[in-house]
Image 1 (tube, rainbow, N blue to C red):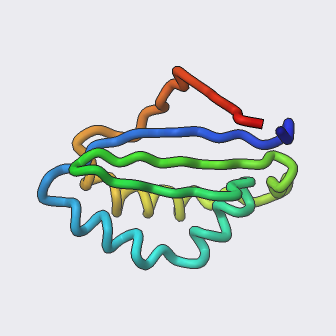
Image 2 (image 1 turned 60 degrees about the vertical axis):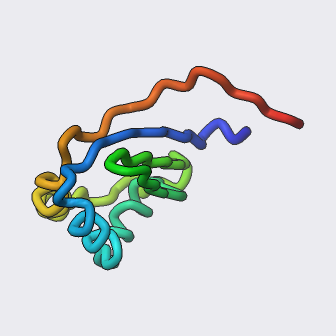
Image 3 (image 1 turned 135 degrees about the vertical axis):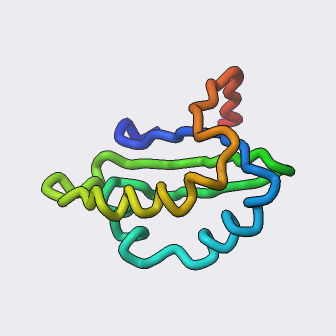
Length: 103
């Protein structure tokens, strides 16, 4: 496995009346947000939903991170304001309890 790659799993819970809004926000993520994620070294970011529980799988590669990137704090804060009201419980890291590599 590449030493610069990392996979993180996070979970969160949505407010019951905010599921549709959360989905709509993710149906049209602005290109600037996607660019910001790529520059942070994010190779893949997927979100799954089961009922009100969200599962986010984030794969990063520090070798792809733009070292002199300008962090757009306003962009991040705006996105967190838009999505923040949707959460009953914010994102928390999930701990790996088992790993099988069938190579």
